Image 1 (cartoon, rainbow over the protein chains, first blue to last red):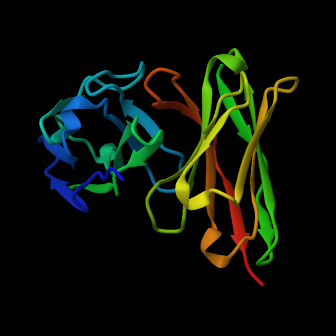
Image 2 (image 1 turned 135 degrees about the vertical axis):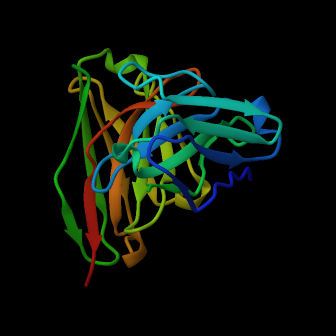
Length: 108
Length: 119
């Protein structure tokens, strides 16, 4: 089965750029989606199809996907960006959704 | 506005079944798939399966096959997820999430239903 690998945690200084990776075999050939989840809340879609932002998501959030790694980039990080972030793909070979294990973002 | 309203918290004994509902509003119910995702305490997101409200077809994660059933009622724009033979490890928050039919991303989520399995 297809697997997605994320770092357990990422730290970023206030106002700097955070990068959260999502690794998978030839993930560049798949559409990657990213979710933000704050404590006690449901996840929120922040990036879909590698690099598209839903309405209401700040331009500070961006995404890229190539080769074996997809990346969520958060520019000018704010305290409110502290959350868990999950990547997700649709594995067409198994007709399953796959989530990464999640990354906890800490803004210092 | 687009909304998914889930049923309330449940407490069940091991071996029992639970049925969680998710009522959709603000969009054409049959134009989007619906995922079910769960999250155990302190853990990550776990995909359970997907239902096409239009025809009722389903696809379940292998881990839950034989224990989970997803259904829908188009007259009330509601989808249901029933999980049987509950065990303590099924204690989790269960979410429904609307799915884009081409790329399967989840753009609208319910607030979640807490299911506690305890003797």
